[in-house]
Length: 114
Length: 111
Image 1 (cartoon, rainbow over the protein chains, first blue to last red):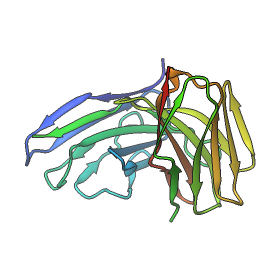
Image 2 (cartoon, one colour):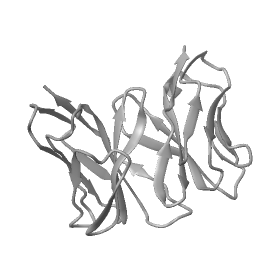
Image 3 (tube, helix red, strand yellow):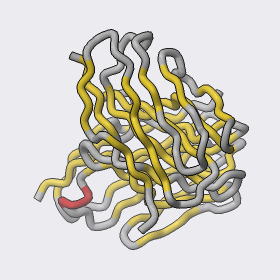
Image 4 (cartoon, rainbow over the protein chains, first blue to last red):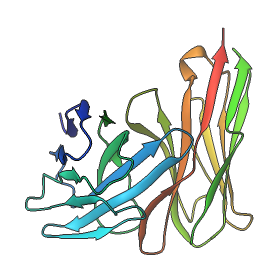
């Protein structure tokens, strides 16, 4: 079945460590996205990519980095520069272009900083 | 910049009631609007997608409407069930940016 796989589901990090969240899709979607969700804050866009080897910053990109070397993969690194990284992270993908952009979401990764 | 507001933030209703969730937005130049459902600790599931040229979409007990001129969308849930308990989010696609989300309405249907 086609879908998006995020791993790990739960992750604990010590302050000062970088961590990488994985996002893989087999939907043949061109566009991929990373969102952060905090209680009462809704979803906020971190980074997005509409094509391989290209990506754009979202509203809260500081302290995060991404790569898009393959169409299927869009890993997110939470760096030590991110001051408050504890949150629920959601990856999504869609076809590119306008009009019928239905987003498919992964199940999420919950990061906790100890 | 597009801003999306969902009211109320939380809603509790007895089983069987019909209910309406509201979504308002500031920029009417949208391509489409989506309603999502999110269960606690889970990802989002798309419920309904309304193109900018459409007025409403229906799926089972769900009906979503779109009024661009007033900057509003509503999600109508008929004959609510305890299994409908979840957070419902609306999101808009406009301009050259990805989806912009509201903060969601947390719905509890009491048996």
